Amino acid sequence: MQDIRAAGGWIGFDRFMQAALYAPGLGYYANESPKFGAMPGSGSDFVTAPELSPVFGRVLAAQVREALDATGTHDVWEFGAGSGALAAQLLGSLGERVRRYTIVDLSGSLRARQQARLAPFGDRVAWADQLPEALEGVVVGNEVLDAMPVQLLHRRAGTWHERGVAWDGDGFAWEDRATALRPPVEIGGPHDYLTEIHPQGEGFMRMLAQRLARGAAFLIDYGFGEDEYYHPQRHMGTLVCHRAHQVDSDPLADVGLKDITAHVNFTAMALAAQEAGLQVLGYTTQAHFLINCGLLSQLELLAQAQRAQAAKLMMEHEMGELFKVLAVAPGAPWVPMGFAQGDRTHRL
Image (cartoon, rainbow, N blue to C red):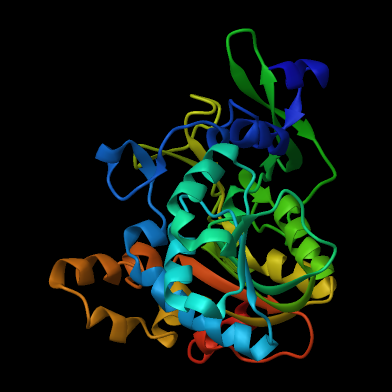
């Protein structure tokens, strides 16, 4: 509310989302709630792949190992490490192949949980408050881009507006203001249309291009290529909230007590990386990526109950199709194992 008053009574949704998620002590990712877990009974709000099954990290480790070898590097950088589950899985699988595992996370409360969980790995794990001018190694980001604040654009009666947030005396309220901002593609049809653009996500990709001197980056998240993202029928956008494993569409309610997220426009991420000097190594579904990296052989080693849980990582109606993997790197392009079959780069 103070930010809104200081800004003259209105802020863009990206500023609101930034505060709702990351304001010290108050934002969703800055408070002590459990957040990550497979079952609502744990007090958690949603599940990510590493919590769903440890097989996720073990399979991803095969790709990370190949990338370390291909780029002649020894370090792993993880952005947004959540509960620390993925870091533990990767470190456990890669062993001494990783010289240093550095976590970059905005959340102080999550950092404390990560430190407790990763204590067995000793001083090989570090946390970075700021990035070096040049970093080398393999970058991993699982469900990082979707948590970056987005701007909302609303076409109403043929005119584009930026949707922001005001205070109406009783609570937060939507307010649209005419804008010169536009989605990256023309939206067909005359109907009203609500969508997102991703300047912070694109900025993150440009930052990677500036800092990643040697290595590769693998970003895993839910989203679409541009044509599907801005399809004329997707007129309500993708912005949703998560709380107690339930989904709702009102980010202005219970602020700080639930996650706010938007799907990723992977075309925008790839273009931002390319324009800043990185090569796109591959883009595919999570199912194709994990199968290429050896998921099926890992499933054979599991008991039936564990196998059923891990299979959700690749099932079309679970995580397999909606989640995508984008890989980028500096220097000459090469083909990582995760994209050997089913690469969709041509569809970005």
